[in-house]
Image 1 (cartoon, helix red, strand yellow):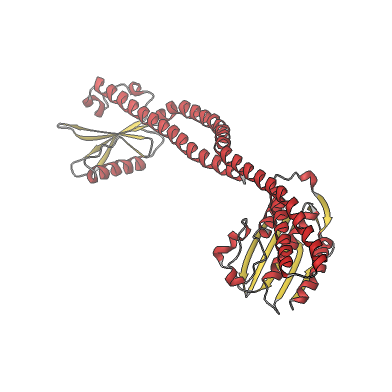
Image 2 (tube, helix red, strand yellow):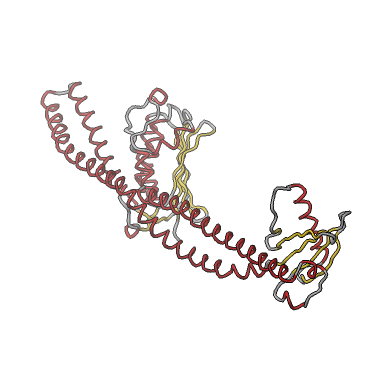
Length: 406
């Protein structure tokens, strides 16, 4: 749980910080590129002003004067017709350039207050009205602005990669620091449960032993029976709490061993058939032979014991229980289904939480502590598997899926 919490916090912090960091880099590069376009436009305008606008539109200048610039000059007639005056824009044909000019005119007409400096990312736009000469549109290729911006882009990419690794490290440390109080609280809770359980085991054992001895001396007594019954239930509760504490600790895979799942299933199912028979329950067993999986066999047996005991407890008299198991597509499947009142959808996720029990008024069962399914869920999680419950067709079905190593 702590590892999952750390991962989620790291992911959240990393995503938010990464978005902010990348947004800053993108904004910087975009602003720098716009500045490069503005500088290119200003330099070109200064060159024209030094020469004179009349000479420029009449092409009365040395053609090498604007060496390094790609541009074209289009005259806008009073009737709206566009005519090429000069074309030094080899990357685009005249039809494309005329289409750009028409687009600019349309934008100017629809947004008269908006100042248009460039279109299509890299085409710089200028417009000049000369008295007695008409209106001229100048389009300049902004590729030199792109080339001037590239070093900053590469630097930003380097900073982005460096920042990413730094961000992963910082988020990992920060998530560890944020989760530490929660981790300490959970650790303290585990210690308390473990210590309290061990402290209670001794007096419960003494009470149970003395009640048994007293029962032999005075014979059957309903008050002694109540004491023994409650003592046994408390002992079971303590044992389950200790089991849960142990399961919450990380499990090393070096303790996993290969075993026959089919034999383990039958070892648990066979003794329980008589319990099901006493309740007039029909038990249907379909288990694939010679199934081998890797894990801790005793914990695996605990899962099937918990699920089958749960099914027997919550199945009404003359009901039906089915246990099916097989290996398919490198996964081990175990399904334990029983007839009975359907489990509401909102309760299904809660079933695997500690001390959660279904509504007693609906189930009529008051002998469970709400730890069995939590234990089963922890065991399955430690084996890198999944457990889920579904209700349909008048049956509640618990499904366990475990990976099978080749």
